[in-house]
Image (tube, rainbow over all chains, first blue to last red; front, side, top):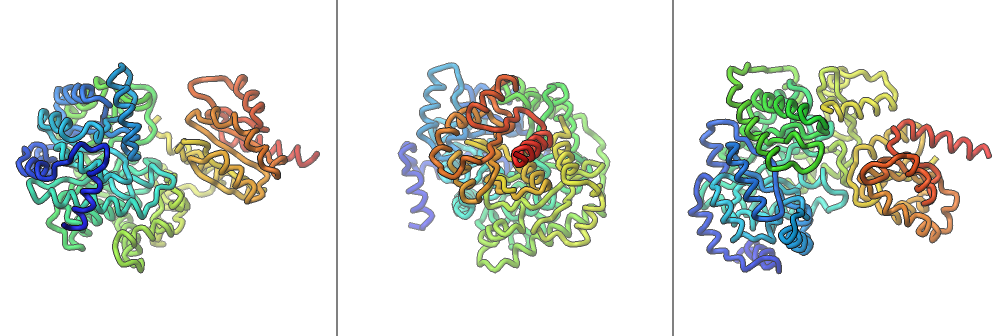
Length: 454
Length: 137
């Protein structure tokens, strides 16, 4: 038996798992409908796929949510996992699920997939027969993704960096890399049986003034860590940044460099897709304004040429959205996409060149680290601040990079910290901003820049 | 002057914490930032370790109330913290509440300075004035 299989048997021997049948799950994936695989829908390339967010504790409520989504002509269904499961606290999730089932109140902020188990969940997934995307935020997702794939969920979001640095203060980053290596290998193995399992990175990170160079570098590194384990279908992603031209430039450079770096590790045969998140920052309380913002995000996603868009709702500022509001966004987004025709092609060569140089410089610094494997190089570079994510709560993150918006609302780096932004690029970034301010002025600008959509 | 700061409890709201760090540094303080998700013991331990004169706790998600009740009790266990200036700021209640009710309550919990939904620079001006007055005495 391989080491991986031994580890799988330990993980799936968990007391909260009801007799995991490896052979039956393999047969299920082998014979599963192609419609369940988002990779299959991507390869047909008919339109930009629309995916909302959403997860409720009980089977019945999740089922009802999916019915609303299907009525709204959804392309990809979400399964958002509750926060206890994300932290591997299946005992609490179990208790809260029972309370939710016995009362009218939802005691969990998502679907506790491990507690429901794959036999139950698979009934829902095969009933709707649409691709499902697993949305979580789990540093140790080994049991969760085994359960997901066995349920017929063939897209797995996340990664060791993007699911840790925005969410955790002190979960060990090196452990996260190893847990995600398991995820990649399991996804790669299942991918050989039918259409490939798609992996998706979480580009929004902290969604707070993250410059495109940092977003792209982390997308590329998580892509490489996944492809080198054998994953054949991968989505890089980013969220609306606040300036349309910066989004267009980011999309273009991300697509170009994803292809380049996949080729560099002899993985050019893998399919790479681009996912765009509607505005992930602070939303307007006014629900009509929120709808306008969502609509504008859809237009920008089209300009960027995204393969999939992930939606928000008019209730974003007030809490977990109702299924009605959630389905309404899907219908509105589909409508906007249908009537958006004859889009111009916009290119800003100077900005693309600057951003490309920045990304190459950081990537080179990562590859030049003396460690022997890619994940260790990346680990070291986060530890020594070569990769620095603004507003990450994690203790390993340096927090020395400072960014603000220029007059066109592009995010610019005014203090590069230890990140190896080339001098000419750094000078260009700073030249776009008014730097004749004291720290109080800059802090006020940052507060303003975070809240631009409110 | 040395300041220990951080966000109390199971609260991960990091943005204001970073901005406070920047602003305190700009005002010439030596900042020891414990970041988000920090427990009361960690604050007091850090104050002892660094010899800080000021402890500036922030809170956004309404947890401050629960933690603050234990401030006096816990602080009394430390022998060297009697002169520590205690400040708390942010959104100090769950739901809505007025500063009129909230400020005296937190002063009772053992804080010298209480800022409920006060803008960052106004709060830091208050701290500066307070320290000047104290040092003049």
